[in-house]
Amino acid sequence: MKKFAVFGNPIAQSLSPTIHQMFAKSCAEDISYQKIEAPLDSFEATIDSFLATPQTVGCNVTAPFKERACAMAKHKDDAVMMARAANTLMRNKKGELCAFNTDGIGLVADLTNNGLNLQGSKVLLLGAGGAARGVVHPLLNAGVEHLHILNRTVEKAQAIAEDANNPKVTAVKPEQLFTDYDVVINSTSASLSGTLPAVPDAVLANCKLAYDMVYSKDNGATIFMAHAAQLGAAKQLDGLGMLVEQAAAAFSIWTGKQPSTASVIEYLRNH
Ligand code: ATR
Image (cartoon, helix red, strand yellow):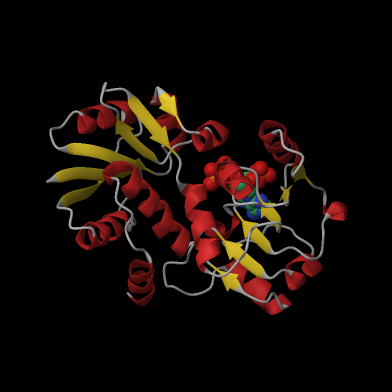
């Protein structure tokens, strides 16, 4: 049996064990996948001891440990370098710790699954924290033509644009915004506290898709989705599909197998 776990604090809310067990079933893998609350003062030791256990293949990491997971790793993929945060860990054959950030791959997969063609598209990213940083490279790799970043603290958006070092990525002020974005993505943590990031009504009203990276526990619309719908945005989506797709990318890194995701997303929507 292959062993996995997700580490966070708190962690009780995590859907990862359910998701990975469904993947394992569909890929004929026999796995255990625990959720483990790591103590805030000994995250690194907790990870080290888990990864040293026989049969362990890898683990996921969630809030508030993603930056510490990045700092621990010897090898980091591009998304980890950009985000300075990792959600997936495993040891290579030499025993060295490798870190991956699959959140952006998950976002791109979910947008694509929902019919959005990112090639040549115009994207507005709201927020400039770790969640925003993690999706910049995957969005560019998917062919986004204009990636605008709008953040309450302008300097943080500018820092991401500088780090991206790509003319397609711009930190924008409200007066520089387009009114015809293909998708407006809310990466801020505002939804979690029931508030909305500031964005002009016309921008949300005219976008093809308003996407919230978080999802609501009761499966209803997040405050951001409800606001966009009220203004007339054509479509709204929460981040449940992204959650399942980032998990699928991690599962694939660990096992080399690509699980199907549609049935898992549907199951979680209905339960
Ligand atoms: P994460 O790693 O989840 O991205 P973070 O690094 O704390 O979390 O970043 C949270 C982001 O949400 C930041 O861009 C923050 O804006 P500031 O950079 O100005 O702090 C944004 N954010 C949080 N609450 C917000 C609110 N009520 N309105 C607008 N932006 C908000």
